[in-house]
Image (cartoon, rainbow, N blue to C red; front, side, top):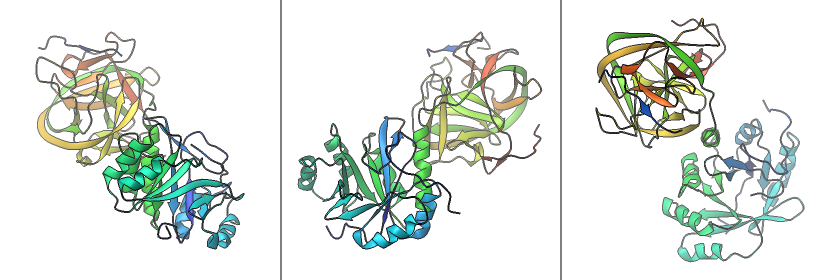
Length: 408
């Protein structure tokens, strides 16, 4: 067990969710026929938890580090519960003089709070027999930290299966942010927490970014009703089909637009038609110059997308989720320009170019003639009402910024 116990402090921090009695740092350290597709619409003293939106499951992260810059990066983001070995009580005092901390300590194979109440057990697991010991644990401690000595995906899945129905939160020690993500996603449910063993600040940023995206799963974006004001055939261009590693349902698609200030909800090819078989993994999204919404409130050019990157899937109610790109196809096809305006701002025009094909559709707004309907671009009429995501137009590397900008 000595090999498992850290020779440096461990930091625990919290993401979005219902908090317990944690204390946060109070300051920062430094047919040309009109076609329509219709569809219906854990937790102990001094520990903080975050909530998984997809499973309503509370997630926790502890960080094992000996690097002060890692601690600094964490505290600057409001993460302030630390765990120390007894030999590092002086360091705990030093860091507590910088920010308001809630220190916990590793002693005798467990983790204890300042009142010497055990808050977690520690286990090494490298065999089914050791996993069984975890299942048979009767001590009433709500947290268990496990070290998978020969890390791989299957043991993580076995642990998730073994602890289903129990009230314990199991943490797995991870050496990278990618490993931590696997533990959070094993058998979809995932472990309740990870211990990220790192001296790399970037690993902190990566895992934070991942959990922020995870917490946004199922949250809603505001979509605005807009009215079609112009439809025009414009000739040939290079358009992008985005094929995802996830299946989409009726009403779902990608947010795409010529300007970041207004993104149109472009429907997936999940609906059956007379022209082609359903491809529920695909969105025929538009030409290479167009913006597409990606996680973190950012945009990307369609031309920048590639296998392994992520985009936001959004439905007609604004509910969002993240999907991984499996393939991108760029081909030359005839394009159609669609422009729209909102009732709130009749002076601003929003536009998108799309392939002029019956399988490419925009989603109508609730209350229009085509309520909850995907309207093929070949059937669009002036005055049709479609859904739009209105946001800030100025962007730098896909990030919204505040500056004067004119686009037309």
